[in-house]
Amino acid sequence: LNALPGRAPRQRVRFLPAPAPGGGGAVELVAARVPVLADHPLVRGPRFKKLKIGAGHRLDVKASGVFVLGIGHGNKLLTDLYNCHLTKVYIVGGLFGKATDDFSDTGNLVEKTTFDHITRENLERILAVIQGTNQKALLMYSNIDMKTQEAYELAVKGLIRPMGKSPPIITAVRCLQFALPEFQLEIHCLHETQQYLRKMVHEIGLELKSSAVCTQVRRIRDGVFTVDDALPRTQWNLQSIQEAIRNCQLKVETELEKTLG
Image (cartoon, rainbow, N blue to C red; front, top):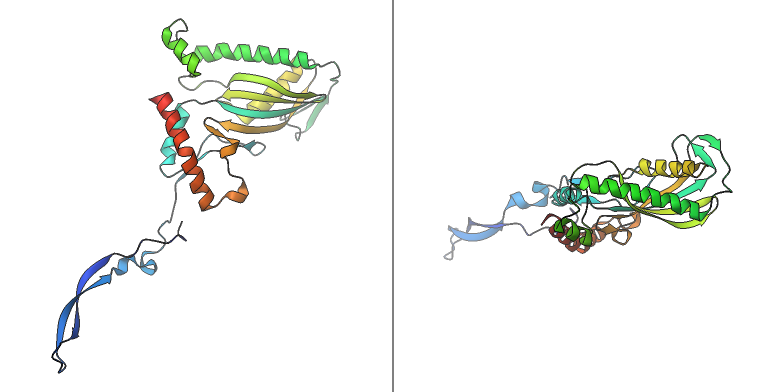
């Protein structure tokens, strides 16, 4: 930002001595416009000495994907988006056959188990139970009477969400890939942590009379922001960031208007 061309220095009128028209060494005062020295870069210093940047829903060191930041006024918008309780989507990889102390494939090995008896149908049955249980929790924490017209309209718009802080809630989960011993899930959730998703993979393994560790947690959507909106490290420069802010501005305004009115 400081490397960009700055505004021109302000001008002010001063009366400066100048030779009089008649000569003879006479001097007169002439009005002239001169720059204000207080606006000179060597006097003023850098235009930006600090920039307020806020973090949205965090990612831990073992996770990757969409990580939203707010710059300047964007910090207030981050708070507003947080109050919308928007759904986040993850791609979670799992590996049957072993368990670790932190539920990830890089943790200390606790045990090894067999997994040949597991089928995709068994896995999807467990996922259906998880989704059904969490749907009941979602309705409970939304504080909405499901017999009202308001509840019907919110359900049609997909706006049934917890009204405040709640435990982690899985709104949808499906199996994307299944090739023993590996599998991959797509999880839609609210108020989760990445460690909670790893523990969920571990518990799925237990339900299937085996064990499982998490090999990958990648967030592909955070509310209105998707992987397509994200900037890889190679594009962390002013021009790319400015363009990303402009492209996402309408998305944010539309979602806030729809949810918060």
